[in-house]
Image 1: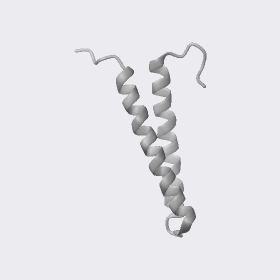
Image 2: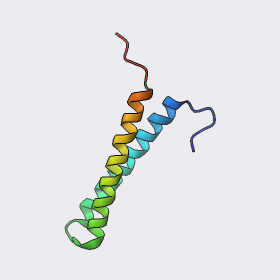
Image 3: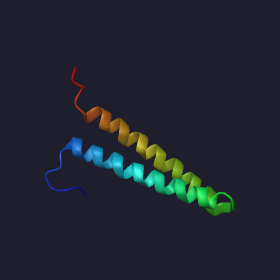
Image 4: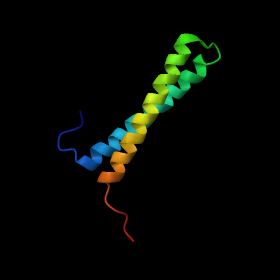
Length: 71
């Protein structure tokens, strides 16, 4: 849960940042596990794909709630 009084735009931005961090951490984990292969590495890759999908959804939401660019 975000801070009290957080706007929809602030929340969308926070969600994108948090999702980006999750993807980066999971990529690092996958790179460590991939050489060994196996079930754990496969699960890590699947989870990375899920996190990437979540990130795309958060970015799409941010694009919907962000004000149009000026100019």
